Image (cartoon, rainbow, N blue to C red; front, side, top):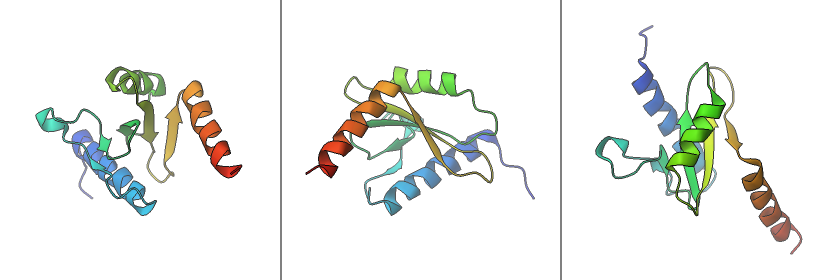
Length: 111
C-alpha cells in the first residue's frame, strides 16, 4: 500500500468532512481553496462556522483550536473537525460557543 503524504491526507480529510456535511443536508459544503488565498478555512459552506479539519493520528487539539480561533472571523464559531484512522469524526469547540448552539437548539425544540 502506498504511503500518503500529510498534505494529501489533509486534503482527503477535508473532502471527506465536506461530504459528510453534504450527507447531513449542508449542500454548499466543500473544501476551501487555501492554495490561492481566497478561502482560509478547510471547509466552506457552513454559514457562521469556521472549520479547521485535522486528519492526523497525533493531534495537538490546543494548537488546532488556536488556529481555528485565530483564522475565524468575529461572527464565526471556530471548530476543529478531526479524526484518527479507523475512528469516527469528532468536533471540538469552545465551551461558550457550545452553549450558544445548545441554547439555540433548545429554543427550536421548545417551539
